[in-house]
Image 1 (cartoon, rainbow, N blue to C red):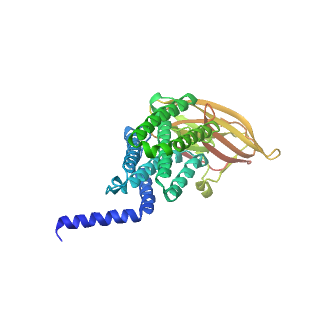
Image 2: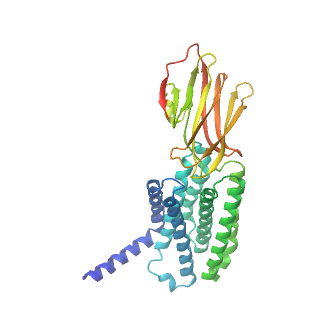
Image 3: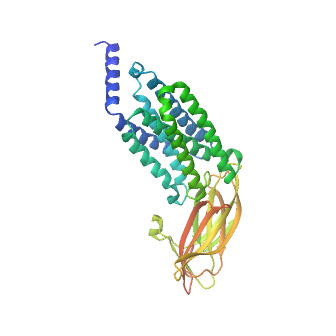
Length: 367
């Protein structure tokens, strides 16, 4: 067998293998995408990060359109030798977008706020095996593509308008919807026959995603990206010293490393401090609020105990730092929600106050 025949034979084996194991390879390509983004992505306001996420979306959009074009040409075009690789490209690129978004969402201290993306990832894996007819796959892929475009817009638009808030969210949704409607017109032109029966289902899927994301935003489930909580903690004292902060803290108990609220032992009349560092992109300013709440064992609910706001300026790798103080806090469970001015949750610090006759031994730390 000469080298040319060997290459042709290897290519045929590869195509056969891909055709037989398309579903498993699609899932594997998505997992690979997740791993790649966890290594490659850095700060959200770095052009390289935005370019990489944007390139993934472009690859997915091109692959969906090319697959649609091939399928619309009939049986002869379906013999296109690399057609089976296009679903892998779609799954890899979309999976990389989700992994990138998950990286940025997971940087928030409130993990529960990221559950919609976890559900989305589960739906992608299930859909990879369930949606095996072409029209259904076009609907599914187009719907996921719109989710990617919308999510990317929510991430990037605040960086360039240097603001966050409801009007920025609405602007992001408008940009995403306009771009995607233009893309659907291109799909209709590339393959009118297979697109026609799928059109209403695509619009229904896109409308559902648009409505769901808006619901998440207005009920405060969607974290206010691109803001993220870089650091937080509860201390006996906090003092700014030039470019650093000096804090006094108790030795951290082992269970605090697993997210369990620590107990702060306060002497008579001693206050408690909560420190936070919120990352924001370059040139973005936002109003941040520390909302203090105490849990009443009598009424079994969290009672508001005050709120303090301050402005953060973006650009610092470790986030913009600030702190608030509560004088003479009552014993019991406390939490401090770190929020934007319109109530979007960035992070949460929970702790328990215990009054003692004498303050414990403290150690100084520079932040």
